Amino acid sequence: MIADFFFVFFSSFAALFLLRKVAKRIGLVDKPNARKLHQGAIPLVGGLAICITLAQFLYYSPTILDDAGLYVFCITILTIIGALDDKFDVSFKLRLAIQALLSVCMMYFAGLELHTLGNMIGFGTIDLGMFGYLVTVLAVIGAINAFNMVDGIDGLLGGLSMVTFGGLGLMLFHDGQQSLAYLCGIIIVAMIPYILLNLGAFGRQRKVFMGDAGSMLIGFTVIWFLLLASQNGSRPPLRPVTALWLIAVPLMDMTAIMIRRIKRGDSPFKPDREHLHHIFQRLGLNSLQTLIAICTIATLLSAVGIYGEIANVPEYVMFWLFILCFLIYFFILSKVEKYSPPQETP
Image 1 (spheres, rainbow, N blue to C red):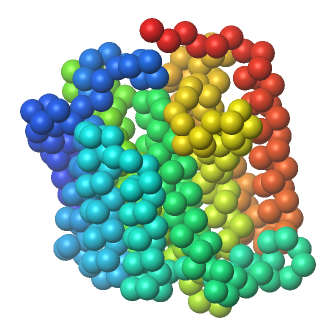
Image 2 (image 1 turned 135 degrees about the horizontal axis):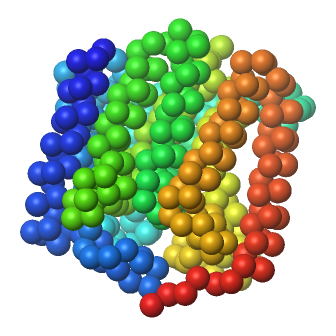
């Protein structure tokens, strides 16, 4: 176990340093603009390094995950598309089409799909039947774009991902599925070097960003694991409603901001500076304080979901509590956004 963690950590670290130089040569960098207020051109290699590290680990340990080859194929395609988007700004319609196609591959070849939502509403078990295919495609696209949209300040995507994989790993371990729980730990370790460089632990000149390649990889991995955990057999280790709590902040932030954009008559995919981290910064918090605040909120919400799972709180109670939390979240953010001063852009 310890040897694997060291191997993954240093593989990820080495990949980041090598890819940084390549990225600068080919122009795979993030440059400042009206929405991106960082300094200098930052290599977008976090996702590439994590993809290479996970593919390498699963090559040597293929039995730890069912359909490991298919999973590696899917994240490789997503990482390549994400890197091309980082470099050339690929059409969002093409990205959505590829995400949908990979979700179909996941359902057809790995048998991973949402076929039940459990007793989420309170009127009995909701079996999706044929609608399960459509709902699964929407869930995959939603998860990928939720983690993509939340990637706005240093460390945030990595921190929220660690909260999700940490909570999922605890639930899998509690259920006795040590191999999958162990893989969640491997993913967390693979992200640590990126988080260190992203936060400037080795100097601002070595800073890296995750890029769309990384956020798409993480979002897809999250939904793959959640489906595997919540739709696996007659008594899965995770009820579908608990999955909502494990990705609460990215999901709530994406939903709230898309609602606000649609109300304004804008495209739900139009970039802006109204995400949760932007609101916190407009209230006067710096980037580190914002990171700590949001990750703390995510951890608390994840803990609520885990408690509800372990204590066997009825699914409909957990679902309506989640909806209540979202409504409170949406109301507070709307008020804060209205009365907080807009953030200046150059």
